[in-house]
Amino acid sequence: MLKVTKAVFPVAGLGTRFLPATKASPKEMLPIVDKPLIQYAVEEAIAAGITEMIFVTGRSKRAIEDHFDKSYEIEAELEARGKEKLLSLVRSIKPSHVDCFYVRQAEALGLGHAVLCAEKLVGDSPFAVVLADDLLDGKPPVLRQMIDVFDHYHTSVLGVEEIAPDESKSYGVIDGKQWEENIFKLSGIVEKPAPADAPSRYGVVGRYVLKPRIFEHLRALRPGSGGELQLTDAIQSLLHDEQVLAYRYEGARFDCGSKLGYLKATVEFALRHPEVSADFSDYLASRMAELQV
Ligand code: G1P
Image 1 (cartoon, rainbow, N blue to C red):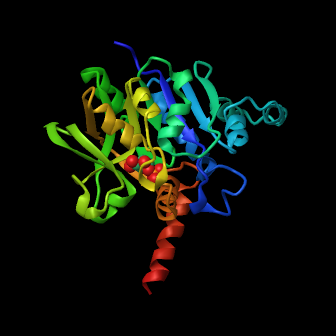
Image 2 (cartoon, rainbow, N blue to C red):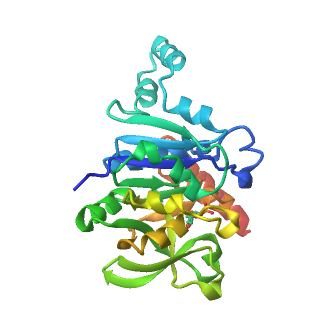
Image 3 (cartoon, rainbow, N blue to C red):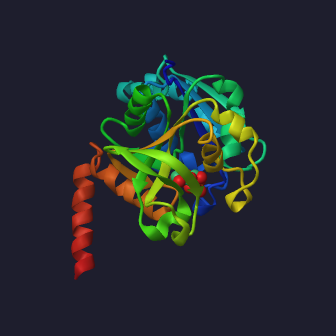
C-alpha cells in the first residue's frame, strides 16, 4: 500500500476577513506570535511523514514561495553578526528532505477546484489536503493521527470535530455511523447546511487524506454551495465508488480564518513561547484583574 508523502495546501484564498492585513500578502502568512500559519501547517505535515508540499497559489505566490526558499541575504547577515540560533531557525524552515512545488489556481472557483489544480503534481498517490487557517494542536500531530487511520483502513479519511448546531453553516457536515471509537463510516456529506438540515453534529476541519480517485469526481463537479466547486461535493460523489471514513481527532483547533480564533491562537501560543510566556502571562493576569474591577 502506498504511503502518504504528498500534501496539498490551497493558499489562493483572498482572506477578506483579515483586510487590510491581507491586501498585499496571503492570510496564510499571518503570524501566530512569530511563525506564519502556513509554517505551522507545513510542520504538521512534516511530522506526519509528508515530504512533498504542493502549494496551490493565487496572487499570493511570492510571499509563500520566498518563505520556503533559501534567503541568502538574511543568512549572510545573520552569519556576519554571529546570530547562530536565528540562522539555524531560518535554515530549518524547509528541511533538506522536503520539496516544495507550486501550482497556480488561475481563478478562485472554490476548494474543490483548488485541489483539482494539484492533480498533475499528486498523480496516482494518496495525498493529504491541509487548510492552514485551521491551526490544529495535537499530540501526535493531527495529520499524523489521520495518516495512521489511513494506513490501517486504506480509505480516504476526513478530520472531524463536534460542532454546535448553529455552526453547521460554516462546515462540511458528515452523515454516517460510528464504526469504532472516534471513527465514523460516511454515508453522506453536505457543505454548509442550515442547522435544520445538518445530518449530524460532526463538522469537517481542514484536514483530509484522500485517495486519488477523488480527482475523477473533482473533474465532474458542478457549482455547489456559494456557487463554488466544493471538495465536499466531490467527496459525496466519491462515496458512490468507495468507502470514506471520518476521524474525530484528538487535540485542539483554532479557527484562524476568524479574528476571534486567530486571537485565541495568539494567546495560547504566546503563553507557551519560551521567550515571552512568563512576561505575557503576567501581563494577561494584570489585564484580567483590571477588567474585573
Ligand atoms: C472549508 C470546507 C468545509 C470545511 C472547512 C473547514 O470551508 O469547504 O467543508 O468544513 O473548510 O475549515 P471554508 O472554511 O473554506 O469556507
